[in-house]
Structures are given as C-alpha cells and as structure tokens.
Length: 76
Image (tube, rainbow, N blue to C red; front, side, top):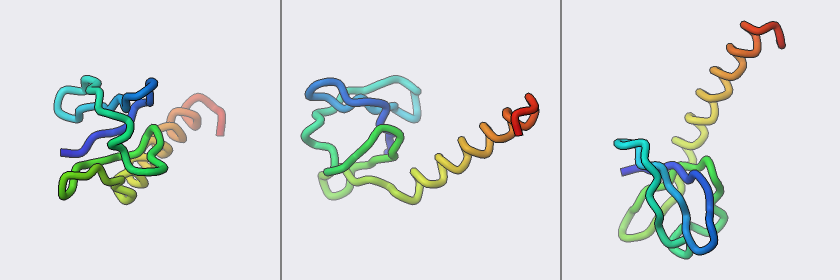
C-alpha cells in the first residue's frame, strides 16, 4: 500500500493512509533518507521506498487543479 508523507513530528513520520484518509504514525528512522512531506512511499522488501513516479504524478495533478482555480479566479 502506498502512503503520502504528511509531516514529521519529532521521532515520527505522519503518513496519510490512502484508504481511510486518516493519519498513521511510523518511526521517522524507518523512512528513506531524504524523504520529504508530499512524497509517496511504500514498503518493499521490508523497507520504506520513495515512489518518485507517483510523487511526480500527484504533484502534476495538484498543480493542474491549482492552475485551473487561479485561471477561474482571474489570477492567470
């Protein structure tokens, strides 16, 4: 299952569960080196891995939606 990193709080990574949209806490030390909020992660072979392709696709969808909102409101 893929999760999205919402934020880091002290020793925990708060990840959004895509099935419930609820936050779940995982040890921050278990996250991949360089992991950032907004990135998609999943477990592969017992280790958390960043899904760079899914992260890029999600960011592109959000940018498209944001641009549509800005255009609709006269900001573009």
